[in-house]
Structures are given as structure tokens and as C-alpha cells.
Amino acid sequence: MSQRIADCLEVLDLVRSLARQSPRSHSSEWRQKAIAHVASRGVRTKTVFAHLVGKNTNDTLSANEIDQLITEWIKDGSPLLRQWLARSCSESDAERVARFFLTEDTTPIATDIGEPEPTGRHLVTTYRVLRDTALARRIKADMDYTCQNCSARIVLGNGAPYAEAHHVKPLGAPHNGPDHPGNIVCVCPNCHVMLDYGAIVADPTKFSNVLPDFISYHNDVILRGKA
Image 1 (cartoon, rainbow, N blue to C red):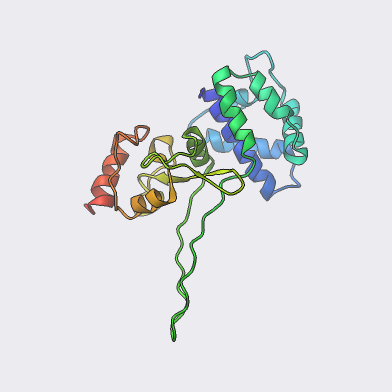
Image 2 (cartoon, rainbow, N blue to C red):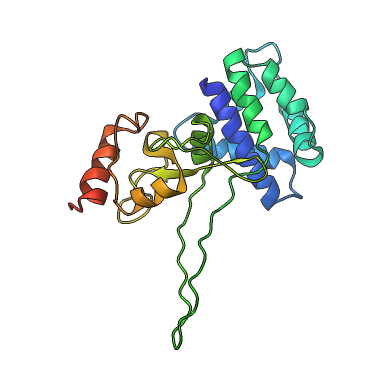
């Protein structure tokens, strides 16, 4: 997938999330916030904007024109944004664009079932936090929602695929891993749990997109418990 289309779809995925959070905001606000977030990883804001509007293609749009397409897509389900994006990208990228617009909802958050309350004790529930960032969703889509560890592909009752994104070097303290494409793999829930708890090795042949330092961190710190 080209960098232009990767940036476009990440921006649009963020726009979709922002629209749900602030439905009364104007599409220009969603767009600007989404572009700023993508650019925060070290890309120029102007570059991300240029990718979004198709600069140097035969169908370059203005800011007002892309905002109008976004508004019609979000509020009315219009196909015009998808059709424009498909026209302004390569044939190989068009398939990825089509998959993005077929999955209108972000990946649902899985929740575990609480255990029955034992006599004389408090109810105990367990859960895992699934950090489903826009970048994580992009990685899952790029992998066609297929587990990189065991090759399982889960399809829900409504026909939507389901997978989880795992940060090989975990986010947050004490690990402080980055939300970076070289640190994220697409896995099924079973493999995700085993990776979280250090029950399986991070195989560099299966996780070929992961940087070697993060593979080593999992295998040395998460798996073997070395400080």
C-alpha cells in the first residue's frame, strides 16, 4: 500500500471516530484534528493534507471539496468519497480502499465474562484493555484480519472480520513501547492473551514487520522475565 493511501485511510478512520465523539462539529474540525494526529509521528502536516486531497493526481480536491465529501460520507453514507479515492489511486491500492469502506465500524472491544459470585465473597471480573488505535486498525486491515501467529481468521455473525492488535513491546509503564507500525502485530484473541502473558515466543519469521529490538524485548523481558 502506498504511503499516500495509508495516510488517507488513517485520517479517514480517525475522522470517523471523531465524528462519533463530536457529531455536531464541522467536518473541517474532524479533518484538521485527524491530520494533526497522523502528522504527530513526524510527518509534515502539509504532506498528510496533500495525501488526503490527492495532490498531483488528476482529481486533486480543495479543502472545501474534501470536507464536503467527508460530510456526505459521515452523515448520509454517500459513496462519492470512496469513488473519488478509488479513482485517484493505483489499482493495487483500490482493493485496500474498498475494504476500508466495507468496514464501516471500528473493531468492537472484546469483554470477558465475569465469574459467578462465590458464597461470602465479592464478584471478581477480569478484563484486558485493547488499545485499538487508528494505526492498530490499519495494521489489522493490512493483514486482512488474519492472525500472524497461527493464521486464524475470525468472522463474526454479521460477516465482519475480527482481530486484535498487539504491541510487541507493550504501551505504558513499565515497558513504554511505542505506537509504531514496527511494534504492532495482528493476532487472534487466543494468541493475544498468550503474548500478553509471555506464554509464547515472538517469532521473527511470523512477525516480519516487527523491528528486531521489539522482538528481543518480548522474548527476553515478557517471555523469560529478564530485567
